[in-house]
Amino acid sequence: MDFSILKTNLQRHWNDTSWWRDIGVPYAVRTALVQPYFRHVADDEGIAVVDEDWDNLLILDACRYDMFRDHNTIEGELSTRISRGSNTEEFLTRNFAGGTFNDIVYVTANPQVDVRLEAPFHAVVSVWKDAWDDELNTVMPEAMVEATLRAQEEYPDKRIISHFVQPHYPFVGEAGQALFENQAGIELSRRMATGDAAASDHLNVWDMLQRGEVAERDVWDAYCENLQVVLPYVQELVDELEGRTVVTSDHGNLIGETPYPCPVPIRMYGHPPGVYAESLVKVPWLVVEGKTRRTVVAETSTTHESDQSVDEATERLRDLGYLD
Image 1 (cartoon, rainbow, N blue to C red):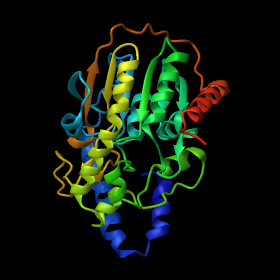
Image 2 (image 1 turned 30 degrees about the horizontal axis):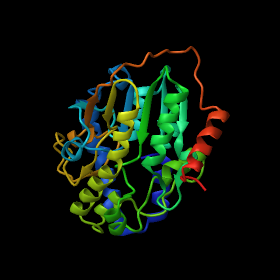
Image 3 (image 1 turned 180 degrees about the horizontal axis):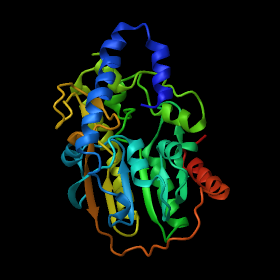
Image 4 (image 1 turned 135 degrees about the vertical axis):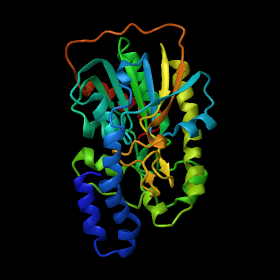
């Protein structure tokens, strides 16, 4: 948890005894006991995704391996990998911070890419800037398909990372929206990226769970529905992108489990940093072979997306009805 977020929560809930019981104290236990344990026993076991063999890396944010295994509809060779991070911040910083990746274009719906990294890629296409859904406080997968295919057209000699939000909350499926009407989206990350106060409009689903406001079964079902929503769009990219495509995740989630193999008997939720429990770092790795491989060229200078490409992408999204 960023210090700014912790400070905001303390200011908002300092006299709320139920918040301290359900959220504050578990946070303290995690910080004092669980994270030090994992730093000692499992700190450097994850893969470096840039060293793996792929032309296109499609990231489904917060997708557990077992959930993907049970609901995946995309044909390919499925195995697992161990992620370097138990949340998006760690995944990004441990894979890319301090490096230079002139052969990669990163297309992202998640503002954390802009928050955590100093543009180490040939280009970053920040889809969240132009295709934000104001009602749901997220980026829908349709916009990611358009932006990713546009990136392939504009950068035919680069590896492409396409980072979706789903299945990460907010829940965008019909049942999920009905169950979690007042739910936080990823507006906190967006506000961090734009320099606004780091705060959410509502409680996120993990805080709701810890406070006993929702049931674990409902959260699991809503997450599965979010995965089912995004998979057809991932399939579209798999069909359209050239080269070898890998579908994976940056991390998973804990949904009331203890953080195995840590011996601390505390039930945990969500994807806290520094907790390398199996359900958090064991991620899917689905390989789909393309008919041909992309010829990749690493150039000597990095760029952020140009004004021209931003304008063109914005117009394409507006033509398709994603923007007003």
